[in-house]
Image (cartoon, rainbow, N blue to C red; front, top):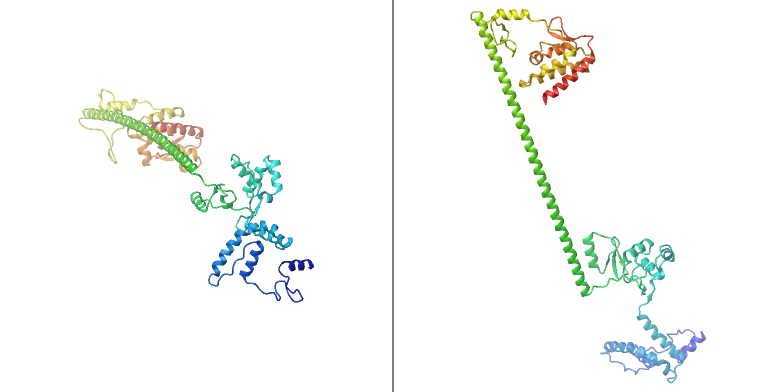
Length: 473
């Protein structure tokens, strides 16, 4: 404390009473106005004293004096050490003035720091020793990769071809509250989703609207503005890229149009070919139907002529009378007989003699099933043979599938389906008798015998189904 008192006494407080109850800044010392204090300060620095300004120009003089003081202060600090002995000032006073001026000059400068000091040494060792990156690249990767090894590797892979990748890392201003959280000054914005660096907020908003990205952060990487030559080169590059894309799109559309046209033509030819084939098949069916109709009409005319010839001969033999019988439904002509003898001599007597001389037919046999089925299939007019085969398939199929069902073991010959679709055709009843059906006692139906062979029934069913499928083709 004694040293401090002696320093104060030598400087400006020689007349001060440092007795008890007085502080260093108070006591009975006369207070100086700001102008007087400034004048004394300039006098100590070696500048000419400035007269006290008037009350009206006080504010203007304050600004000018402050400018002069700030301008002359650096020059005056260099002369303090030389003038101090001649003016009677001590060496300590000169040092204090120099330190004060140097301190003011230092406060004006921005403190610069090394950004690599805050990096993790373990991460640097991992990148250099384990992964083989150089020290400079490892440090840059950590600085630009959010301080993580994964981010550093991603950044290095994306920027390993940069020209300045191996340049030394420059010092950056110390964090003053407006810089990023890791002690670096934020000079751009970075998209964490695609890694693109954006120079300002306008480019950030444009990038967000264009790509839909929303994860951004401040970055210390400086986005240098493009020069006029770089802008022109960038524009030309974009134009060439757009032209290439447009050419590629036009070529692709052209190829797609060609493919669509080929497909359309191919489908048109196929449709024409299919239509021609269908028309040809329709013409064939019509020609076949006409041929069948002509054949059926020819056979019918022959039958009618034979019937008329038979009636004529019968009338000639019976003096103009016919021996035909009337049924419940009216006149029932004889069954269709296409094989009529050429000479109709003999009349009714010859007919009776023919009936008497007619040999007794043999009982139906399972060995003749093919013959019976072929006779039924020969009826082509109006599809009568197909209808008969369908009814026979139903009769035999029901017995094969349900052998113990009583209703399927009997056939009512008085039924309309039997009378119209089975009875008129030769071979139909013979087939039923051959597979095991026998006439009932009253003669009105057929009943399957108890000793009927199931294998014969199954064989008959297969043959009837095959004949029906062949008939319908």
